[in-house]
Length: 112
Length: 112
Image (cartoon, rainbow over all chains, first blue to last red; front, side, top):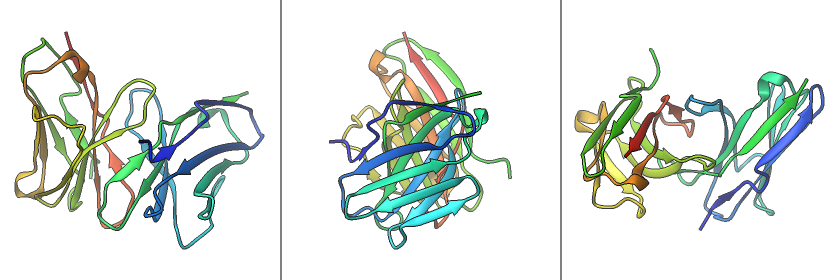
C-alpha cells in the first residue's frame, strides 16, 4: 500500500509562472512532511519541510501548504526557473526517529 | 564536513555473487537510513539505524539483505546471492534529530 502518493508523474510549466506539485498521504500518524528535489545521477536534496502543527511554510520561492483534514500537501514554486527542472519527491514521517516514506515523485520541466 | 559518502558508486556483478556497499554519514548524525530506488520510482525504505541499533527493517527485504552499523558510525549493506531484481540504486541518508535527511549520491548495482 502506497502511503504517500503523487498522482502527477510529470508537470510542464512556463518559466516565470507558478509550479504546483501535489501530494496525498493516507497515514494519519504522519506529523512531519518534507519535499526533496532530485537531479539525474545525484541523490535527493532537501528542499523544504512542514510540521503538522502548521499549515504553511515559506522559504524564498518555495512554499509548502498542508491540509491535515484532507491529508494533502502541495509545493508551490514561484516564479519557476529552468533550473527547477528536476524530480520532486514528497516524503512523510511519523513520530520522531521514525522511518521516512517517499512518494513516487513528479518530474517538473520548466520551459524557458 | 563532506556530506554523506557512499562507495562504490557503481557495481556490476554476476547473479549469485555477494556485494557490499558502504555508507559514511555526516559526522554526529545519529540516524542512518538505507533506501533503494528503481527507475521512475521514489526511494523505497529498506532499513534504518539510531546510532548502532537497527530499529526497523522493511518487510520487502529478504533474508539475503543485511545491514550493520558498528559503533554507530559508518554502515554497510550486504546483498548475498544477488538476483537480477536487485539491480537498483541504493541510497544512504543520515539525519540528526530533525526530520531532514541528507542523502549520498547512491551506489548503483547492476546484476547480470
